[in-house]
Image 1 (spheres, rainbow, N blue to C red):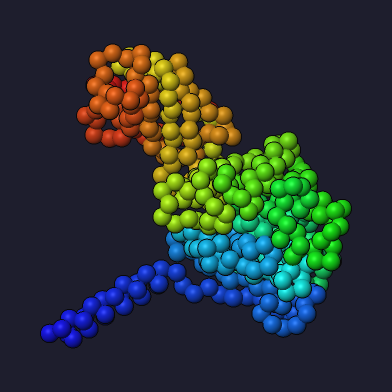
Image 2 (image 1 turned 90 degrees about the vertical axis):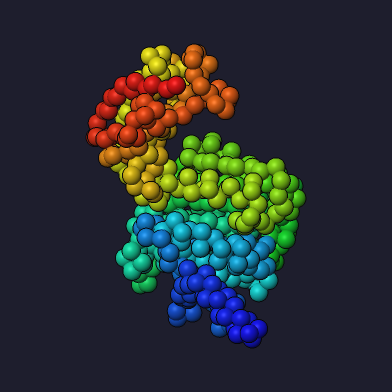
Length: 407
C-alpha cells in the first residue's frame, strides 16, 4: 500500500507543480541586433543584448513595458528584478520585455548600456502590431543600477533616425512612463553608488565631468515621462537621496510623479514577496498605472454633486466612481460640506460606474457606528436597498444629488 500511496502523492505533486508552472509560458528570446550589436566584442551571450518577451497571462490591455534588472552594471538580477517583475506585469495584461543589456564587468561602458536599453524600447514600439500593443503605451522599469539606466533613457531619449536603414532605429526611444525601484541616480554626489560608476564608466570612472553628465536628476526636463518611484529609508547601498533628488527634479519641471519611501527594507528587494508592508509598493504601482490610463486609456467627464446623510450634508469624506471595466481608472472626489466636484481631467470614466460614499459621522446623531471609528461607508441609498448605487456618466458635465439614509 505504501508504494502505491507514495506514487499517487508524487503524481499529485507533479500535477500541482505543472499547473503552477503553466501559468507563465516560457518567454521568447530575441536578439536586439540579429546581425550583431554595435561595439560587440564577440558572439558570447554576454556580448549579445537581448530581450525575453513575456506575454500576458491576463487578457492583454495593450500596454508594454521594458524591464531593466539591476546589478551595479556588473551583473544582472534577472530573477527578482527581471522575471518576477515581468510576471507581475503579465498578471495586469501587460506584455513585458526583460532586457539583458551589456555590462561593465564584461568590458562594456557608457554609452553601450544606454544604447542597448534604448534599442529595447524601440524594439517594443516597432513591434507593437506583432504583440498587439499600443505604441503610445510603452513603459520602462528599472531597479538599482537598472533604475539608473532607466532614468538615463527617460532623460536622454531620442526621437529616432528617420533616415535609418533599420526600421527599428526610426522609432522613438522615449518611454511613455517610467518606474524606478531604489534607483541609482547620481554618479557624482556623496550618495552615489561607486561600484555602478566604476563599472559604467570604465576608464572614465575618475572623470567628474562625465559622471556629472550621468547624474540623471540634472537631466530631467518637462519632457521626462511621468514617473513612479519606490525606495526604502534603510537602504544603505543606494541611499534614498538618489530617489529624492530625481523626484524633486520632476516636481521642479512639473512632470507628474508619485514616490513611496518605506522605513524598513534593505537594498534590492524586488517585489519582496510575502512581506506584508513592503510588498504593497506593487499595488500602489498598479493603482498608479490604472488611474493614469496606462493600463487602459479611458475618456473621462466632469462630475459634481451633493450628498446628504439622513438629510444632513455630508461633512467630510469621499465619493468614489468605479467603472465596470476592471482596468479603467477609478475617480475619487473629496466630499466637503455636502458637496464634491471632479474636473474632466480627474473625472469619472464615461459609462456605467459603481458609487461608494464614505463620510464622517461627527455631525450625525442616532448613527449605529458599530466600529466606533467616526467614519462609515455605503454603496446603497438605504440599508435595505436591493441595488447598489450606480451612475451612468455621460460626456460633458454631470450633476447628481445623493440622498442617503443610514441607521
